[in-house]
Image 1 (tube, helix red, strand yellow):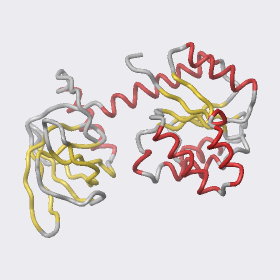
Image 2 (image 1 turned 90 degrees about the vertical axis):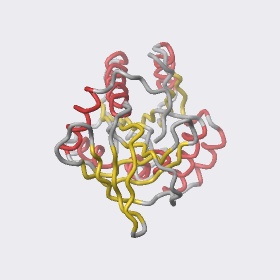
Image 3 (image 1 turned 60 degrees about the horizontal axis):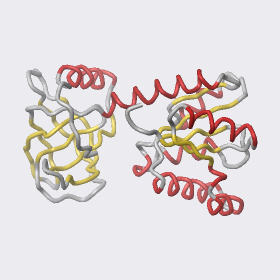
Image 4 (image 1 turned 180 degrees about the horizontal axis):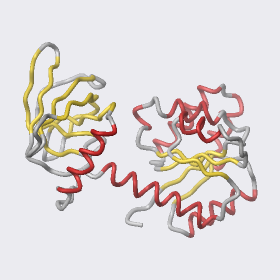
Length: 251
């Protein structure tokens, strides 16, 4: 893989857990178990559901975790609650969630995906096949995050003032607006994005998430809702303009 992927496993299977982690490490992943963090484990024993979410989220951010694998059959945490709360936290939005279970109930997968999981895997499944599914998920996430520099502009209204600015780069998940105005993090605005050669602007809702301090200064905006048609439009546009690789990630 082009970069090392860090995995945090939330499970309670003892010896089998260590064998699985060893298999992941042999395939080039940095993998560790939640129970290997003594302080987190000690806190979880006495924590309620929301405290458990906060502990695991803080640990994942501190350790730069890319992927969390959650065994739904463990009694360590309330897995559905954990996934649902993760998806409500902006700070953990880029962490992928994979849920596993030996249960075969027809509604289980639907409930898990509704809770925020990116992938549900029914066990037992050979490790090679499991890792193949995870690699596919990571490739998909890479396409989502691919950014392209474009010649375009954007318009939005903030605090009763209309702003027009250029676009530094865009992906399916957000856009970097080329403007130096000050703003409050978390502000949500409706943005008209005028892509090159497009007949109509792309009208999306976005949240101000950060200011870039790199060479291309601007406001990083994360899209908060996209229709399937808008996703298709962005993916087609990015595919047509993705020849220039970008080194900086802004949002």
